[in-house]
Length: 326
Image (cartoon, rainbow, N blue to C red; front, side, top):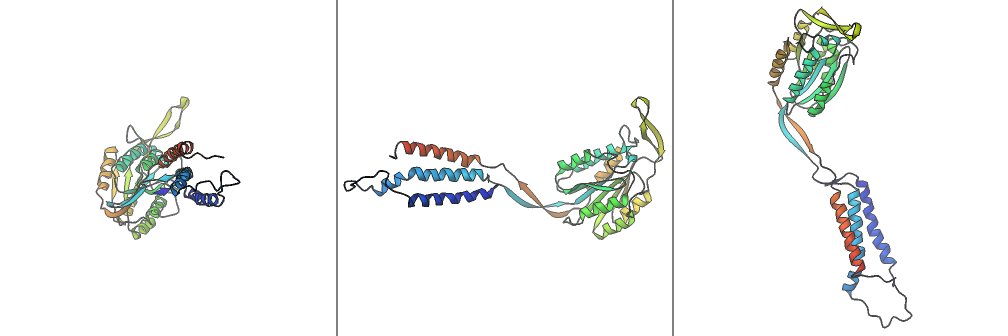
């Protein structure tokens, strides 16, 4: 049992203070010049006379507990399960708009398959990094798959300066995995180009990741040869296309992957990319501790209704059984 606003429980201290002042200031309700003929009330009658005040104390106590935000059954449990920590590093440079995965472009297919991959996870912790000329962490490593899905859907070309900084993306992803507990840590890097931006050399970044026990699985996205690329809009707003050569530094991606114990894959269409993710599904797992929280709404209604019921009891008793004469 917990409270959302526990500081309000200090108001409960006012109840014994009120009783103390009440007892000290207690006196006869009516004054007589001669009280010799009055009968001393019995102990039972005195207790009955105090019933409204006692009930009122319970009313105030119930309402203070309700105001403090009583929370019941709010639990957290640690569960041992098999899983890996993964960071998806997705290229969002302008070349990812190439439409060689007809009828979709490379980025749309990468997003679709990434979401399918996320939906196939159950215990793995996953983060998301997007990169072009620079790298940006979209989602830290988490098991909140709904947030991850939305972040993948929101990936757009043009949000980062154009270019392909593979080394920077690896360093950013590795930094996110560095403090994550567990033995199995993986970076899945999707790109369709060559490293042409950033101050960090991809091979150096890969060596640093390997030192941290992180494997890198690289995916070269796109067909071989040439691909149709949107280059702007013409008269009337129609999209203009140009066929440009596809340049993927497969040698670099293969070396980066092998230096960390990972693998390089080439995905030339949506089906191939899906098969790549299926293979990554078979990666080794290790036991991790996952803390699961169960949160409930504040249970203020119970003490609130109890206070109302007790208030009704007080009013009934005060007007029938115990009637005070001013």
